[in-house]
Image 1 (cartoon, rainbow, N blue to C red):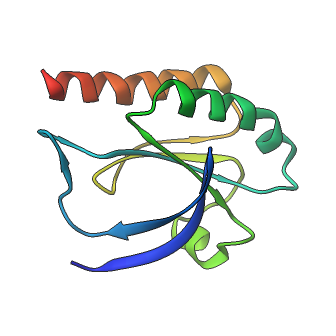
Image 2 (image 1 turned 135 degrees about the vertical axis):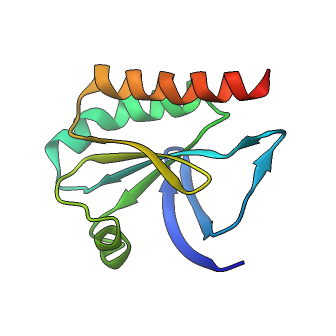
Amino acid sequence: MICICYVVQQATGFKFLHVCKSNYMTKRCLIEVIANFSASWCGPCRIIAPFYVELSEKHQSVMFLTVDVDELTEFSTSWDIKATPTFFFLKDGQQLDKLVGANKPELQKKVTAILDSKASCET
C-alpha cells in the first residue's frame, strides 16, 4: 500500500487525508469522495462554499473535501486543475465525474448520482 498524506480542509474542519492506492470497502461498496479544488480569492468558490457545506452536512455518508489550490499547489497540479472551483467525484480513488465551475444545480445533480450509485450498491 502506498499512502501519501496531505492536509486538506473538510467542509467541517481540518483533517489529514491519506490518499492510498488500495481497495477500501464500506460493506460491499467503495468509499465515495467529492473533492472541491478552490481558492480563497476565488469569487465563485466563495459563492458555492455554503451550498457545498450544506451538501456535506446533509449527506454524511460521502466524504466532502476542500483542497486549497494555493496551499497544495503540487497536489492541485497533479490533478490538472485549470479553473476554480473544480469538483471531482471519486470512488475508491477513481474519478467518476468532474464539474468545473460554481453551478449549484449541476453539483446537486452529480451528488445525487453518486448517492444513487451508493444506494444501489448497498441493496
